[in-house]
Image (cartoon, rainbow, N blue to C red; front, side, top):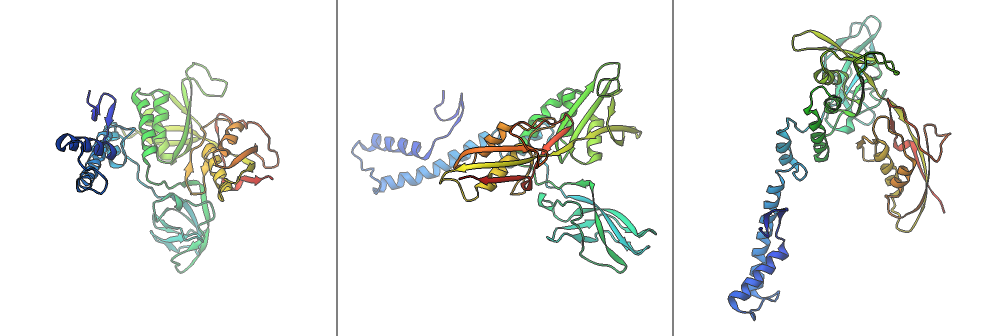
Length: 398
Protein backbone atom coordinates (compact mmCIF):
# COMPACT_ATOMS: atom_id res chain seq x y z
CA UNK A 1 0.00 0.00 0.00
CA UNK A 2 1.27 3.44 -0.92
CA UNK A 3 2.31 5.52 2.09
CA UNK A 4 1.59 8.86 0.44
CA UNK A 5 -0.75 10.03 -2.31
CA UNK A 6 -3.67 7.78 -3.29
CA UNK A 7 -3.93 5.02 -0.69
CA UNK A 8 -6.51 2.42 0.29
CA UNK A 9 -7.82 4.96 2.80
CA UNK A 10 -8.03 7.85 0.40
CA UNK A 11 -5.52 10.59 -0.36
CA UNK A 12 -2.72 11.15 2.15
CA UNK A 13 -0.92 14.45 1.61
CA UNK A 14 2.69 15.08 2.54
CA UNK A 15 2.95 18.13 4.75
CA UNK A 16 5.82 20.61 4.74
CA UNK A 17 7.26 18.97 7.86
CA UNK A 18 7.03 15.49 6.27
CA UNK A 19 8.92 16.71 3.21
CA UNK A 20 11.63 18.40 5.28
CA UNK A 21 12.13 15.24 7.34
CA UNK A 22 12.49 13.11 4.20
CA UNK A 23 14.90 15.56 2.52
CA UNK A 24 17.08 15.88 5.63
CA UNK A 25 17.23 12.09 5.96
CA UNK A 26 18.23 11.83 2.29
CA UNK A 27 20.91 14.51 2.75
CA UNK A 28 22.45 12.55 5.64
CA UNK A 29 22.47 9.39 3.48
CA UNK A 30 24.29 11.24 0.69
CA UNK A 31 26.67 13.49 2.64
CA UNK A 32 27.07 11.66 5.94
CA UNK A 33 25.39 12.00 9.34
CA UNK A 34 27.51 15.00 10.30
CA UNK A 35 26.27 17.26 7.49
CA UNK A 36 25.31 20.70 8.80
CA UNK A 37 21.49 20.98 8.64
CA UNK A 38 21.10 23.77 11.18
CA UNK A 39 18.46 26.36 10.28
CA UNK A 40 21.09 28.91 9.10
CA UNK A 41 23.16 26.52 6.97
CA UNK A 42 23.06 26.96 3.15
CA UNK A 43 21.89 23.39 2.57
CA UNK A 44 19.06 23.67 5.12
CA UNK A 45 17.87 26.93 3.58
CA UNK A 46 17.96 25.36 0.12
CA UNK A 47 16.00 22.31 1.31
CA UNK A 48 13.34 24.48 2.96
CA UNK A 49 12.78 26.46 -0.24
CA UNK A 50 12.33 23.26 -2.23
CA UNK A 51 10.14 21.70 0.49
CA UNK A 52 7.82 24.69 0.51
CA UNK A 53 7.28 24.42 -3.25
CA UNK A 54 6.68 20.67 -3.02
CA UNK A 55 4.18 21.13 -0.16
CA UNK A 56 2.14 23.47 -2.39
CA UNK A 57 2.16 20.81 -5.13
CA UNK A 58 0.90 18.20 -2.66
CA UNK A 59 -1.93 20.57 -1.66
CA UNK A 60 -2.91 20.95 -5.32
CA UNK A 61 -2.81 17.17 -5.79
CA UNK A 62 -5.08 16.71 -2.76
CA UNK A 63 -7.59 19.25 -4.08
CA UNK A 64 -7.60 17.51 -7.48
CA UNK A 65 -8.31 14.18 -5.77
CA UNK A 66 -11.05 15.68 -3.58
CA UNK A 67 -12.71 17.38 -6.53
CA UNK A 68 -14.10 14.02 -7.68
CA UNK A 69 -16.25 13.56 -4.55
CA UNK A 70 -19.43 15.42 -3.60
CA UNK A 71 -18.54 15.64 0.09
CA UNK A 72 -15.05 17.05 -0.58
CA UNK A 73 -15.36 19.07 -3.79
CA UNK A 74 -15.86 22.83 -3.56
CA UNK A 75 -16.74 25.67 -5.90
CA UNK A 76 -16.77 24.88 -9.60
CA UNK A 77 -15.41 21.39 -8.99
CA UNK A 78 -18.57 20.63 -7.02
CA UNK A 79 -20.62 22.05 -9.90
CA UNK A 80 -19.00 19.53 -12.24
CA UNK A 81 -19.65 16.59 -9.89
CA UNK A 82 -23.37 17.24 -9.30
CA UNK A 83 -23.87 17.91 -13.00
CA UNK A 84 -23.79 14.14 -13.56
CA UNK A 85 -27.01 13.94 -11.53
CA UNK A 86 -28.65 16.61 -13.68
CA UNK A 87 -28.24 19.32 -11.03
CA UNK A 88 -26.77 22.78 -11.42
CA UNK A 89 -26.02 25.43 -8.82
CA UNK A 90 -28.81 27.95 -8.38
CA UNK A 91 -27.72 31.50 -9.21
CA UNK A 92 -28.76 34.53 -7.21
CA UNK A 93 -32.32 35.53 -8.08
CA UNK A 94 -34.35 38.72 -8.16
CA UNK A 95 -37.09 39.40 -5.64
CA UNK A 96 -40.54 40.19 -7.04
CA UNK A 97 -43.44 42.18 -5.64
CA UNK A 98 -46.86 43.15 -6.90
CA UNK A 99 -47.16 46.96 -6.79
CA UNK A 100 -50.39 48.91 -6.73
CA UNK A 101 -50.20 52.44 -8.13
CA UNK A 102 -52.70 55.25 -7.68
CA UNK A 103 -53.02 58.21 -10.05
CA UNK A 104 -55.04 59.90 -12.73
CA UNK A 105 -56.98 57.56 -15.04
CA UNK A 106 -55.24 56.97 -18.35
CA UNK A 107 -51.72 57.71 -17.11
CA UNK A 108 -49.28 55.13 -18.46
CA UNK A 109 -46.63 53.64 -16.21
CA UNK A 110 -43.82 52.35 -18.44
CA UNK A 111 -41.84 49.14 -18.10
CA UNK A 112 -38.74 49.74 -15.97
CA UNK A 113 -40.48 52.38 -13.83
CA UNK A 114 -38.54 52.52 -10.55
CA UNK A 115 -39.79 52.57 -6.98
CA UNK A 116 -37.74 52.17 -3.83
CA UNK A 117 -37.75 51.86 -0.07
CA UNK A 118 -36.50 54.49 2.35
CA UNK A 119 -33.33 52.41 2.57
CA UNK A 120 -32.70 52.71 -1.17
CA UNK A 121 -33.72 49.19 -2.28
CA UNK A 122 -35.00 49.61 -5.84
CA UNK A 123 -37.58 47.64 -7.81
CA UNK A 124 -38.49 48.06 -11.50
CA UNK A 125 -41.83 47.27 -13.12
CA UNK A 126 -41.77 44.33 -15.54
CA UNK A 127 -44.35 45.62 -18.02
CA UNK A 128 -46.19 48.76 -19.09
CA UNK A 129 -49.58 49.37 -17.44
CA UNK A 130 -52.20 52.10 -17.61
CA UNK A 131 -54.07 53.46 -14.59
CA UNK A 132 -57.73 52.52 -14.89
CA UNK A 133 -60.86 54.56 -14.44
CA UNK A 134 -60.87 53.66 -10.75
CA UNK A 135 -57.48 55.37 -10.32
CA UNK A 136 -55.53 52.17 -9.72
CA UNK A 137 -53.08 49.97 -11.63
CA UNK A 138 -51.34 46.78 -10.54
CA UNK A 139 -48.09 45.47 -12.02
CA UNK A 140 -45.40 42.99 -11.03
CA UNK A 141 -41.99 44.47 -10.21
CA UNK A 142 -38.53 42.99 -9.79
CA UNK A 143 -35.59 43.97 -7.60
CA UNK A 144 -32.78 45.67 -9.49
CA UNK A 145 -30.14 43.54 -7.74
CA UNK A 146 -30.02 39.78 -7.14
CA UNK A 147 -29.27 39.30 -3.45
CA UNK A 148 -31.33 38.19 -0.45
CA UNK A 149 -31.00 41.66 1.09
CA UNK A 150 -33.29 43.01 -1.66
CA UNK A 151 -36.34 41.35 -0.09
CA UNK A 152 -38.94 43.75 1.28
CA UNK A 153 -42.09 43.48 3.36
CA UNK A 154 -45.50 44.96 2.46
CA UNK A 155 -45.80 48.74 2.23
CA UNK A 156 -42.05 49.37 2.14
CA UNK A 157 -41.95 50.28 -1.56
CA UNK A 158 -43.49 53.72 -1.30
CA UNK A 159 -41.01 56.11 -2.96
CA UNK A 160 -41.22 56.95 -6.66
CA UNK A 161 -37.67 57.06 -8.05
CA UNK A 162 -38.52 58.57 -11.44
CA UNK A 163 -41.85 60.47 -11.16
CA UNK A 164 -44.11 61.00 -14.18
CA UNK A 165 -46.88 63.51 -14.73
CA UNK A 166 -50.17 62.44 -13.25
CA UNK A 167 -48.64 59.97 -10.80
CA UNK A 168 -49.89 60.31 -7.24
CA UNK A 169 -48.06 57.51 -5.42
CA UNK A 170 -47.66 53.85 -4.54
CA UNK A 171 -50.16 52.42 -2.08
CA UNK A 172 -48.32 49.24 -1.17
CA UNK A 173 -47.21 45.72 -2.03
CA UNK A 174 -49.32 42.58 -2.13
CA UNK A 175 -47.34 40.27 0.15
CA UNK A 176 -49.30 37.21 -0.91
CA UNK A 177 -47.60 37.35 -4.28
CA UNK A 178 -44.11 38.21 -3.15
CA UNK A 179 -41.29 36.02 -4.43
CA UNK A 180 -38.19 36.26 -2.27
CA UNK A 181 -34.77 36.86 -3.75
CA UNK A 182 -32.17 34.20 -3.06
CA UNK A 183 -28.42 34.46 -2.79
CA UNK A 184 -26.26 32.22 -4.97
CA UNK A 185 -26.50 28.66 -3.68
CA UNK A 186 -23.66 27.76 -1.31
CA UNK A 187 -21.64 24.55 -1.49
CA UNK A 188 -23.44 23.21 1.60
CA UNK A 189 -26.87 23.92 0.14
CA UNK A 190 -25.91 22.38 -3.20
CA UNK A 191 -24.67 19.20 -1.51
CA UNK A 192 -27.89 18.90 0.52
CA UNK A 193 -30.00 19.33 -2.62
CA UNK A 194 -27.89 16.75 -4.44
CA UNK A 195 -28.53 14.13 -1.75
CA UNK A 196 -32.24 15.01 -1.63
CA UNK A 197 -32.43 14.54 -5.39
CA UNK A 198 -31.26 10.93 -5.05
CA UNK A 199 -34.72 10.07 -3.75
CA UNK A 200 -36.25 11.03 -7.10
CA UNK A 201 -35.02 7.78 -8.59
CA UNK A 202 -38.39 6.15 -7.95
CA UNK A 203 -40.99 7.78 -10.17
CA UNK A 204 -44.21 9.13 -8.64
CA UNK A 205 -43.35 8.13 -5.07
CA UNK A 206 -43.99 10.41 -2.11
CA UNK A 207 -40.23 10.91 -1.75
CA UNK A 208 -39.88 11.86 -5.42
CA UNK A 209 -42.73 14.39 -5.15
CA UNK A 210 -41.13 15.91 -2.05
CA UNK A 211 -37.71 16.05 -3.70
CA UNK A 212 -39.13 17.66 -6.85
CA UNK A 213 -40.87 20.40 -4.86
CA UNK A 214 -37.79 20.96 -2.68
CA UNK A 215 -35.86 21.57 -5.88
CA UNK A 216 -38.03 24.63 -6.66
CA UNK A 217 -36.14 27.90 -5.96
CA UNK A 218 -37.31 29.51 -2.73
CA UNK A 219 -38.91 26.38 -1.26
CA UNK A 220 -37.79 25.93 2.34
CA UNK A 221 -39.66 22.85 3.51
CA UNK A 222 -42.22 20.38 2.16
CA UNK A 223 -44.47 17.67 3.52
CA UNK A 224 -46.43 15.19 1.42
CA UNK A 225 -49.52 13.31 2.62
CA UNK A 226 -51.49 10.70 0.69
CA UNK A 227 -54.68 8.71 0.90
CA UNK A 228 -54.09 5.34 -0.79
CA UNK A 229 -57.53 3.99 0.15
CA UNK A 230 -60.76 3.95 -1.83
CA UNK A 231 -62.61 6.18 0.66
CA UNK A 232 -62.20 9.70 2.02
CA UNK A 233 -59.79 9.75 4.96
CA UNK A 234 -60.16 11.44 8.34
CA UNK A 235 -58.47 14.63 7.07
CA UNK A 236 -60.93 14.99 4.19
CA UNK A 237 -58.60 13.82 1.43
CA UNK A 238 -60.51 12.02 -1.33
CA UNK A 239 -59.62 8.46 -2.42
CA UNK A 240 -56.30 7.99 -4.24
CA UNK A 241 -55.09 11.54 -3.64
CA UNK A 242 -51.95 13.42 -2.60
CA UNK A 243 -51.71 16.59 -0.52
CA UNK A 244 -48.53 18.66 -0.75
CA UNK A 245 -47.90 21.29 1.92
CA UNK A 246 -45.11 23.72 1.07
CA UNK A 247 -43.38 26.77 2.53
CA UNK A 248 -41.87 29.19 0.02
CA UNK A 249 -41.43 29.06 -3.74
CA UNK A 250 -43.40 30.65 -6.58
CA UNK A 251 -46.90 29.23 -6.93
CA UNK A 252 -46.57 28.35 -10.62
CA UNK A 253 -43.18 26.67 -10.09
CA UNK A 254 -44.48 24.56 -7.20
CA UNK A 255 -47.49 23.47 -9.25
CA UNK A 256 -45.26 22.53 -12.19
CA UNK A 257 -43.02 20.42 -9.93
CA UNK A 258 -46.04 18.55 -8.53
CA UNK A 259 -47.46 17.98 -12.02
CA UNK A 260 -44.18 16.51 -13.27
CA UNK A 261 -43.73 14.14 -10.32
CA UNK A 262 -47.24 12.96 -9.42
CA UNK A 263 -48.57 9.72 -10.89
CA UNK A 264 -51.25 9.80 -13.60
CA UNK A 265 -54.73 9.31 -12.19
CA UNK A 266 -53.79 10.57 -8.71
CA UNK A 267 -55.69 13.66 -7.59
CA UNK A 268 -53.86 16.54 -5.92
CA UNK A 269 -55.74 18.33 -3.14
CA UNK A 270 -55.37 21.73 -1.48
CA UNK A 271 -56.63 25.30 -1.33
CA UNK A 272 -54.18 26.67 -3.93
CA UNK A 273 -55.32 25.87 -7.47
CA UNK A 274 -53.14 26.28 -10.57
CA UNK A 275 -53.63 25.08 -14.15
CA UNK A 276 -50.45 23.55 -15.58
CA UNK A 277 -50.13 22.83 -19.29
CA UNK A 278 -49.09 19.25 -20.02
CA UNK A 279 -46.91 18.02 -22.89
CA UNK A 280 -49.97 17.85 -25.15
CA UNK A 281 -50.95 21.44 -24.44
CA UNK A 282 -53.90 20.51 -22.25
CA UNK A 283 -54.44 22.36 -18.93
CA UNK A 284 -54.22 20.15 -15.84
CA UNK A 285 -55.52 21.34 -12.48
CA UNK A 286 -52.96 21.06 -9.68
CA UNK A 287 -53.85 21.77 -6.07
CA UNK A 288 -51.63 22.14 -3.01
CA UNK A 289 -51.57 23.90 0.36
CA UNK A 290 -49.35 26.60 1.76
CA UNK A 291 -47.85 25.98 5.18
CA UNK A 292 -49.15 28.17 7.98
CA UNK A 293 -46.30 30.07 9.63
CA UNK A 294 -46.51 30.10 13.43
CA UNK A 295 -44.65 32.98 15.08
CA UNK A 296 -42.56 31.84 18.03
CA UNK A 297 -41.61 34.18 20.88
CA UNK A 298 -38.62 33.32 23.07
CA UNK A 299 -37.39 34.90 26.30
CA UNK A 300 -33.88 33.89 27.37
CA UNK A 301 -32.32 34.71 30.72
CA UNK A 302 -28.63 33.87 31.04
CA UNK A 303 -26.07 33.93 33.79
CA UNK A 304 -22.64 34.58 32.29
CA UNK A 305 -18.93 34.49 33.08
CA UNK A 306 -16.17 36.95 32.16
CA UNK A 307 -15.66 35.12 28.84
CA UNK A 308 -19.12 36.08 27.59
CA UNK A 309 -18.53 38.13 24.39
CA UNK A 310 -19.69 41.70 23.90
CA UNK A 311 -22.06 40.53 21.15
CA UNK A 312 -23.23 37.54 23.16
CA UNK A 313 -26.89 38.58 23.24
CA UNK A 314 -26.97 38.90 19.44
CA UNK A 315 -25.23 35.54 19.04
CA UNK A 316 -27.81 33.83 21.26
CA UNK A 317 -30.59 35.28 19.09
CA UNK A 318 -28.85 34.00 15.96
CA UNK A 319 -28.41 30.51 17.42
CA UNK A 320 -32.11 30.32 18.29
CA UNK A 321 -33.09 31.53 14.82
CA UNK A 322 -30.85 28.88 13.23
CA UNK A 323 -32.72 26.23 15.22
CA UNK A 324 -36.30 27.46 14.76
CA UNK A 325 -35.96 29.19 11.38
CA UNK A 326 -36.03 32.80 10.18
CA UNK A 327 -33.65 35.60 9.22
CA UNK A 328 -30.68 36.08 11.54
CA UNK A 329 -28.69 39.22 12.33
CA UNK A 330 -26.53 38.80 9.20
CA UNK A 331 -29.58 38.65 6.92
CA UNK A 332 -29.26 34.88 6.34
CA UNK A 333 -32.53 32.96 5.98
CA UNK A 334 -32.44 29.68 7.94
CA UNK A 335 -34.88 26.85 7.20
CA UNK A 336 -34.86 25.70 10.81
CA UNK A 337 -37.10 22.85 11.93
CA UNK A 338 -39.40 21.37 9.34
CA UNK A 339 -43.13 21.29 8.76
CA UNK A 340 -45.10 19.87 11.63
CA UNK A 341 -42.11 19.70 13.98
CA UNK A 342 -42.57 20.94 17.55
CA UNK A 343 -40.32 23.58 19.06
CA UNK A 344 -38.37 21.65 21.69
CA UNK A 345 -37.63 23.57 24.88
CA UNK A 346 -34.37 21.75 25.64
CA UNK A 347 -33.14 22.46 22.09
CA UNK A 348 -33.53 26.19 22.80
CA UNK A 349 -31.44 25.83 25.97
CA UNK A 350 -28.80 23.96 23.97
CA UNK A 351 -28.80 26.71 21.30
CA UNK A 352 -28.20 29.42 23.89
CA UNK A 353 -25.35 27.42 25.44
CA UNK A 354 -23.46 27.45 22.14
CA UNK A 355 -22.29 30.99 22.98
CA UNK A 356 -19.09 31.06 25.08
CA UNK A 357 -19.37 32.30 28.65
CA UNK A 358 -22.95 31.14 29.25
CA UNK A 359 -23.05 29.64 32.74
CA UNK A 360 -26.78 29.03 33.16
CA UNK A 361 -29.87 29.42 30.95
CA UNK A 362 -33.58 29.82 31.58
CA UNK A 363 -35.92 29.84 28.56
CA UNK A 364 -39.58 30.72 28.13
CA UNK A 365 -41.23 30.05 24.78
CA UNK A 366 -44.68 30.36 23.23
CA UNK A 367 -46.82 31.63 20.38
CA UNK A 368 -47.94 34.62 22.45
CA UNK A 369 -45.45 36.91 24.24
CA UNK A 370 -47.83 37.15 27.18
CA UNK A 371 -48.30 33.38 27.56
CA UNK A 372 -44.90 31.69 27.46
CA UNK A 373 -43.95 28.43 29.17
CA UNK A 374 -40.98 26.23 30.08
CA UNK A 375 -41.90 23.44 27.72
CA UNK A 376 -42.34 22.36 24.13
CA UNK A 377 -44.55 24.28 21.68
CA UNK A 378 -46.81 22.02 19.63
CA UNK A 379 -46.90 22.68 15.88
CA UNK A 380 -49.65 21.32 13.61
CA UNK A 381 -48.88 19.01 10.70
CA UNK A 382 -49.53 21.83 8.19
CA UNK A 383 -47.72 24.46 10.22
CA UNK A 384 -44.09 25.55 10.48
CA UNK A 385 -42.46 27.46 13.31
CA UNK A 386 -40.58 30.68 12.60
CA UNK A 387 -39.10 33.47 14.67
CA UNK A 388 -37.19 36.72 14.20
CA UNK A 389 -34.81 39.01 16.03
CA UNK A 390 -37.62 41.17 17.42
CA UNK A 391 -39.38 38.11 18.90
CA UNK A 392 -36.38 37.00 20.96
CA UNK A 393 -35.39 38.79 24.16
CA UNK A 394 -32.14 38.08 25.99
CA UNK A 395 -31.66 39.19 29.59
CA UNK A 396 -28.58 38.75 31.73
CA UNK A 397 -29.07 37.96 35.42
CA UNK A 398 -26.65 38.75 38.19
